[in-house]
Image (spheres, rainbow, N blue to C red):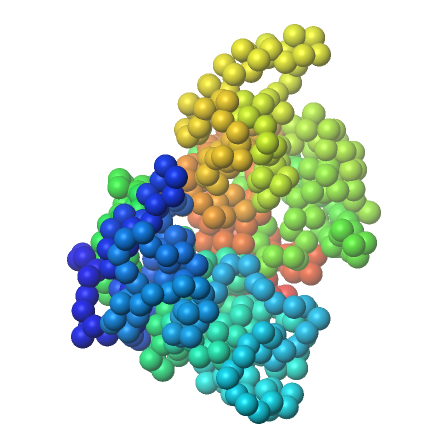
Length: 513
């Protein structure tokens, strides 16, 4: 491990020297040094709130540092806007794509870009240039294809092609594999390797430590706004546990489910028979799905985003009516389109959109925790007894290690603490079934380990868990079986002990045996 202040002779193309950035009451970056060398993939790791986003905004001209300087090609640079960074070949590709669906790949690549040419290029010339860039970096997508026709992986290639076409030699990638299949992720890694072979450089931000170890040359870890250190991935010492320890300052259990002690029962607790449902726009989203979940079992639902997973979760929890089929709990059918009936029967739900759907962000923490509480000691007739409600919240805050007070507004919580509030509320209702979507998306390694531990504990107490996630490593760690969805259908159900991510990835793409 070493510090990061390096000279121009070391081939640093983008860096920070003593960068400090303050916001009211917070030091987001505290004397941070960082150096990206030419021809490397360099991971930037840290918990939520560690200062990664602030540092990247400084490196791309969105923020100016209060102290310290940005280094470009070994020399101090002043970036007044992202346009200055772009002019220097530095671009950032965000998690959420900024593409126009009804335009072609070539049109999106050149949209809003002024190349400084005096002559106008024809559509055919632009398409040829885009195709040449795609071929050079092994990122082929047809220049005339419209964005709405592309897979998620192909759309990401378009986002990266936009930067390469505009002269990028340095890319900052923010959580680039969140919604990719394993095959798409490996294709991305191959493209990144091709880019660095051509002299490019990449800053790789990810919470997926196995990916970091697979694709990166070096890793820099930030904690509480400070640079903890930089390690070489190929040093024979660095591993996932060591990186997690650097990120949080203590040993962390990464959350693999222990060997089960035996299921509570052998008869399915939750059963779906030929279930179909329409999506938000009336088109079929779930098509003839049949599944069963045993007490104490964790059944994973895998698939690329938008293949019916969200709609399936809403059908099981009564949020969305089904157009056909049966959902039964303990042999008794659940009412279609009735979340109240599902909740009364013991179905708990943690949706992927924590703030938009799962919680009431404008309400206080204790009020959110009471939304699933039955009539009891917290109530006086039709009214809530505030003192008892706060006492109820204090107990859950302690049990679930929520970093917040009962009177804290939920919108002021971090993503990890908001997820803990949701889990505390749902699990404290003693559910028989838990449906949870994207449980650790966007969480830092410590919050991720805590959330996984709560899920494992729930299953060990006999709860039937339906776990929907696009993170295949997470599904492999926590689940007993995994059902894979593609285009609204289940393309296969596999046992975790006899499958691998490659097989699951093929099923996600609709390839069946």
